[in-house]
Amino acid sequence: MKKVICLLLAAVLPAVFISSCKAKQKKYSATKIMMTTVVTVTLYGGSEEILEGAIGLCESYEKLFSRTVPSSDISNINESGGAATAVSPDTAELINKGLEISLRSGGAFDITVLPLSLLWDVQHSAAPPDDASVKDALKTVGFENVSVNGNEVTLKNDASIDLGGIAKGYIADKVAEYLRSEGVKSAVINLGGNVVVLGEKSGKPYTVGIQKPFAGQGEAMLTLALSDKTAVTSGIYERYFEYDGKIYHHIIDPATGKPSESDVASVTVICDSSCIADGLSTACLVLGMEKSAELLKSYGAEAVFINRNSEYSVTDGLTVDTTGTLPMIALK
Ligand code: AMP
Ligand code: MG
Image (cartoon, rainbow, N blue to C red; front, side, top):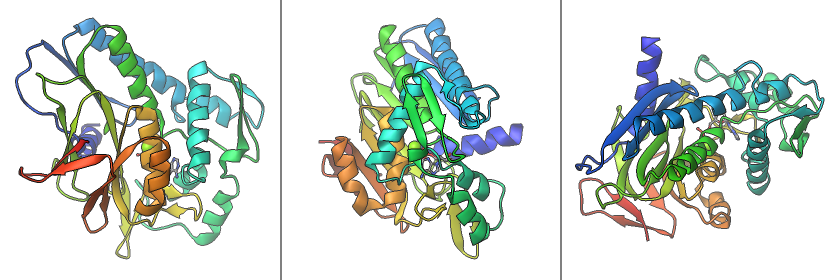
């Protein structure tokens, strides 16, 4: 377990660091391994009870959305054999959001990619699967196989659902909503790199680091100045194996059934909704930088791309200040 926690910390901590200026308000912080990642919630102001409430919220959502938790809504849907399955309103809402991004990204994002993720199993595999197996797994993939009618979800064509590309963002939004309703004015919610910041810290925007792809633990390449926004990163360096000099990572291109081969090594999406940013970051990684522009624009989202040569570029709504040690990116 210790090894697992260290690996998780290594995977997540590099992506985010928080500026260290002194807070006037009392700090409450909790870190927990959840949703196969490291979850940290930090409040400036509030109380221990509010913090516990935030962590409790993450736990209850994980029980609904995880495909590996028996009797979660997603397990029930996947085991239904195609029968209509009643789910909680939150699950129905999240699936609908996932379907919308699937549609608007032209299928680059697809919540039915699960058979391919299981086939590639990049955390345990040492070599790619054969083409026939990929072709076979592709047969059940297609978001059009999912229909939501009120709070009932139905799958056809033996499809199965995995919300791993969007659920953390949805949960981060819900935690932010809860903290605001409790009167918390300044906080950072970090669900394994899905970051939401509430307000500012000591009158200044929070500083969030963007990990240099494939670099050492905690090595930021860029920094982001953020207040009352979310930033979500998807990266090919997060989970992968290398075979014959090629990287096989965890984000699958549903068009090929293989890990995306776009020019993008990492993409960080910045907008108001963490759920949208989460779905978009996964989609943009598949689409590549050029094809992502229209999709991002349609959601009013901004993004920072790092390509496979470690060169970065930003969308039109962002500015870059290069006078410091690391480039500092902010919304215009
Ligand atoms: P993220 O880290 O948010 O980009 O999500 C990656 C996770 O989303 C993977 O571990 C899979 O569970 C799932 N996933 C992989 N490829 C896709 C895809 N093309 N569309 C939607 N979800 C995906
Ligand atoms: Mg995502």
